[in-house]
Image 1 (cartoon, protein in one colour):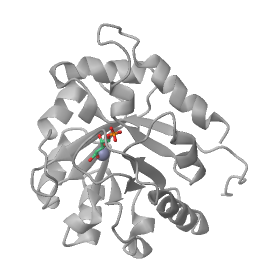
Image 2 (cartoon, helix red, strand yellow):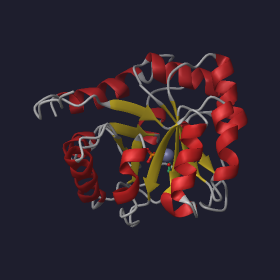
Image 3 (cartoon, rainbow, N blue to C red):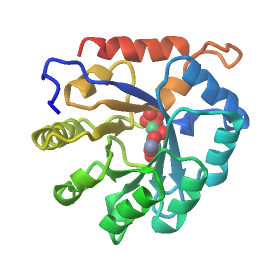
Image 4 (cartoon, rainbow, N blue to C red):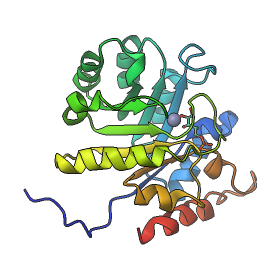
Length: 236
Ligand code: DX5
Ligand code: ZN
């Protein structure tokens, strides 16, 4: 095993957040963003308790799998408690299951629970949340997700100080030589994705920037926004 030279471009992944999709035709929406070149489906689960909004659960994840979606599904749990719902999402076909470190009383146990159910665990940090728990958990997870907005809603403004946090997490991952993805979520679009990539992020959630693009009647309406996102990070 040897690590990749620093000059090698990262394997960037675009993860449209279906929070901003048209839920009345969700299967079609997901097919279209994936056909346009998206890599991962970002699936926002909100419980009107940990965050002040209520969205979708395991039944919808299962419905997407039954519809024929084979791409990774990145389940972002904004729920408290966390553990009760983990097996349901594993059964429903989740690939990643990420949870907010401050939403679980037993972070190590929740990570192990996700892993034991055959999914890839990840830890999520709100903009002002401390990263200290990563010191003990970074080698046990597959993804760190940094929130660049306060969770609960799509279409908010990117919080710039999270770039410093991203640089810090990237340094921790690289110093330890770990294969952990660094994902960012909130307020990302063609105008700032390059700056975010330069801070060491490799996986980019984009909700309103993607699903807000183009005319509803155009089956290729996501092609150009996904291409723009990719073009902006191509040389980074
Ligand atoms: C916010 C969600 C995000 C949201 C991002 O709590 O976790 O995934 O959909 O939306 P945009 O990209 O519009 O900021
Ligand atoms: Zn999210």
